[in-house]
Each structure stands twice: as C-alpha cells, then as structure tokens.
Amino acid sequence: MSDPDEDTDADSDAGLYRYTPPVHEMGIALEVYRTCRETVEAHGGGRLKQARLAVGELSAVEPELLVYAWEAVVEEGPDVGAVLIIEWHPADQRCAACGEAKVRATGSWMRICPDCGMPLEVTGGSELDVIDLSFEAIEETG
Amino acid sequence: MTKVVTVKRRVLAANEERAETLRARFAASGTLVANLISSPGSGKTTLLEVTVQALDGEFTTAVIEGDVATENDADRIRALGVPAHQILTGGACHLDARQVEVGIEDGGLPDVDILFIENVGNLICPTTYDLGEDFKVVLLSVAEGDDKPVKYPAIFARAEVAVITKSDLLPYVPFDLESVKSQIASLNPNGNVLVTSSLKDEGVDGWIDLLRTRLEAKRQSLG
Image 1 (cartoon, rainbow over the protein chains, first blue to last red):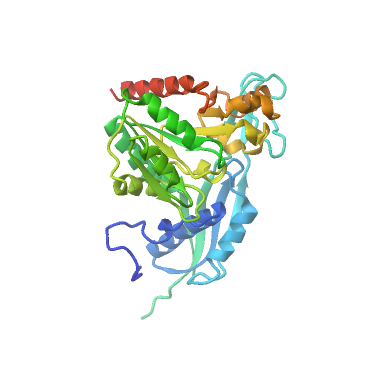
Image 2 (cartoon, helix red, strand yellow):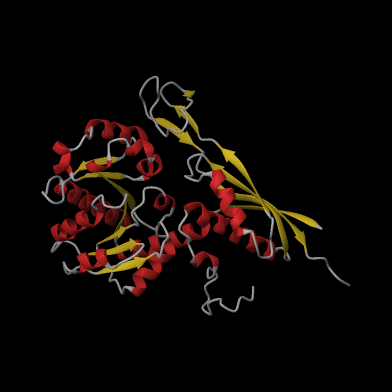
C-alpha cells in the first residue's frame, strides 16, 4: 500500500477506482480485483489464488467477457494467474395471479406472464458480488 | 498456507456508497436529479435545451454532461445561460458516481432545483452505475428502430421514464410506436412512456409536467 503515485488526500479510493477503462466488463473486473486485493491485505497479505463471483442473469454482465477481462487484469503484478470462478444466478420469476414460476424465453427480460398477461414478480438475478477468495498467505518467519 | 476468506461484497459497492453520499447531498439541497441514458444521437442534449428553457423562471437547473470527447454539449447548455459542466471520460463508456461528485466541484455547479445528468451515449454500461439520481430516463429516437427495448432490456427495465424522441420523423421511418410501448410495458410495467419532438415542441409539456410532479413529490417527502 505504498504506491508513490497515490494521492496524498485521504481518499482511499485513489488508484484503480479512478481509472475506468472503455469496456464495461473491464471496469467490473478491475473493481472485483480491487475488492480482492483489499481483502487479502486486510488478512495479512499474500498472493491471490482464486476469487468466486456471483453474477446474476439480470446484472448486464457477460461472464465470458468478464473472465477474459480478469485474465488481462491479473496478467502481471502480484497475483499472476489468479483464477476467477463465476457462479451464475438465474432470476426467479413468479406470476402473482397464476401463483406459478414462469420460465422466461432465453435472452428475454419480459416481465409479463405468458399465460395471463399479468406483471411477473422477479426475484434475484441482479447479483454481482464477490463471494469469497483464497490466497497464499505470507509465511510467518521466526 | 492457503487461506480462504468470505468476502460477500457487492462489486459495485464503492460506487453505490458514493452514490448514496450524492443522494444525501441532493436531498439536503432539495434537488431533483435525472440521469439521462440513450444511444448517441437520440436527442438527449436537444431535449435538455428545450427543457431548461421551458423551466426558466420557474425552477433553477444545471446540467452535467458526460462524453468521451469535446465540450460541445456543455457549450450548448451554457449558451442558454444555464450552468453546465462537461465530464470527459477519455474513452470510458459511462459515468460513475465519483465523476459526478468531482464534476459538481470542478464545475462549481450551484445547488439547483433540478439537475440533469446526461450520460455517455450508450444503452448498456450506464445502466449499472448509480449516480445518486432520483430516476433514470431512457431516450429512444424513432430513427433507431422499434426493436430496441427488447434488444437492450436492462435500461428499459430500470428507467422509470422512457422518452420516445424525434416523433416528427414518424411519417418517414418504419417505427411501430404501439409495439415499442408494449415492449416497454412488458419490461417495466410501472414505467412512464412519453412521445416527444424537441424540435417541433410536441409532447415536451408532458415531460415538463413529469419533472414538476417529481420535484414536488420529492420535496414533500423530504418535508
């Protein structure tokens, strides 16, 4: 945490957060990495090995692109080769009128019951959370 | 030794925390904030030009413009005597809460009744980033085609207000207005759909009324 370029103001979000690259998933990947890095530091430091991320189908994030962006993020630096595991969370939608779970057509976000035309209640599917991570801890000496 | 740590943190938590700070600030000043999102060229700036003129004398307004390059949009707003600040993202495809926070300071924007944030022209990325706004507005011009709501469902599902722009071009382009309305209703059953032409001053009064109502409601809820 001794980046010489770091801002001198009391802003803990300096650094990675400042820079938002032109690809949506790249920005997300950097944000995931930043969260992981901070967590590892808070637990004594070490080399990040794996992070698990929950991604909901309504989160507007494309898992393949995200993994690709992640690989670019950990291509160099202290966590080379760290793996990003994505846990996919489908949205559950229910028709209040029919009282049944409805299957939405692939790729569609329609929120109307295909049977009775009433609005569907949608739960879940917007996840975008770092679940946990594993890291190689710095060995205690002496 | 490998250690496993439970994190359970939203990826966008840092942005969301900043957005909440902004929201508190806007509540303190009683400012209504609208985040305008659309593809490039759908008429966000033109709608804002007619909007700030229509509200002139009744409410104070200011505009934050987000673009990859140029001060063009902020210049257009300033030319109308309304404070504006241009955020240049240098390639980034959306605004985030931090940029808005810094932009308000850098631009020296005063506390106003209604603040408009014109996001970078893009129907995808801005959807995910909370800017502390009261509501998102998605714009869709009739020249863009009538299948856009189902093709870009996230923004149409999340924007409380959808404004169909350039309605004066309806006779010249294939655009099934009823189909678009029903797509939006399916994605967002509680949303508002307005049909406007900024150049011909059609439907703009409905948009102005909506702003008036939202501002009133916000101030009442703030007490």
